[in-house]
Image (tube, rainbow, N blue to C red; front, top):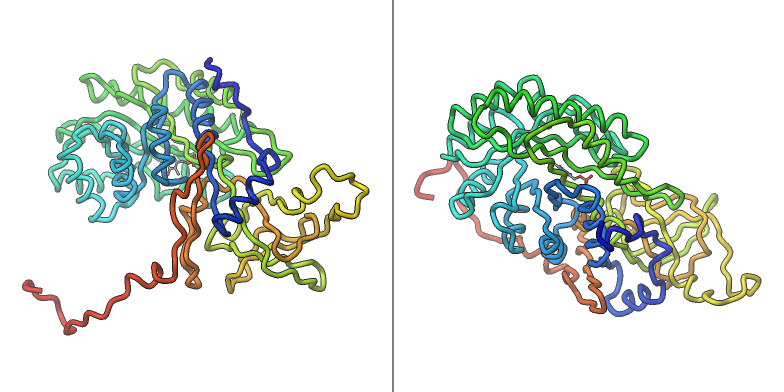
Length: 441
Ligand SMILES: *Cc1c(COP(=O)(O)O)cnc(C)c1O
């Protein structure tokens, strides 16, 4: 184990420096994403130490900021891309073809066209197909490169029904069809290199039994595929991501060592290399969202703390009922070093922290005890590094926020704040005549 492996398994919201965050909010304004690259590296190194022989891919849909991709690539991560757009960003961040796995989920033609074009320049890239139809569509485009098959193991895991993919018919070829499909692909001259499954997000220590069973099925399948396709057999068996992080303050962090041990045991003897592809685990606790308090309203049953971030900035609470820790940085800075009996200490009162969007679902928490908020306070929402900015939208014509990166003793604006001009930029007035499309158009 390297020294880096001893970094703490979780960074809590309370571990962040309140005064520093508050001054960032001052300088760059709110809402503002802050991401600490050194924490991203620490998270990567812990996974690398737990899975020393595995190929580690970062599922970049969790946070595709170029600075994150470059940092993880420097650590040795490959990149798992869920779309042609992500694959393009991966290559633009300096990834080589061999670093890129493109996982085609019901891929639009435009995506397949792009990837097959990119393959001409990057013949080492890997395409993971989740249906026989996708394999045919690749063949139609002349693709016979590295092919991995996503299988549906019929087992789901995860923190919410919307992220349990393992049993959802949308994802992967039914495991019992996999051998036939790969035999067929081998005959069609594809370079069959792997099998893949991702059973969902939020794998936790108490779901280890399900993880074990899933991995055992993948090991069995790998042995059967090897026997069927001949040649060098499979190069890798990818068991997906989904490593959970503790969103609640009292939740224990994932015991990576026991997940790794269970994985090694359950997969059994295989010639192929193990691959894992966490997204959330690398970035979640490396990021916070800073938001300013606009309005404080005493309502009948609660106090509504209106903030300038909303579901368009961080969608997870509205979409998954996700819990995110919230901290009043201003109250913490004000009371730092102050005796708890002092008047400066703000009493906690139940608060509903709500965004500025015209939707009743636009709340970050309901009736949560937080130090009494005041207009102008800065709140930090924790564990916002994963699936935060990536799911942001411009709904209500809200420009998306800026992202600031901390890197050792450096701090910089990694992505500027959008303006309303950015929101309207795509509108145009070119008019053409209606009617069926003609070739000369
Ligand atoms: C989303 C996704 C991941 C990463 O999931 P996390 O929960 O962020 O670890 C990995 N593989 C695939 C195919 C995915 O779609």
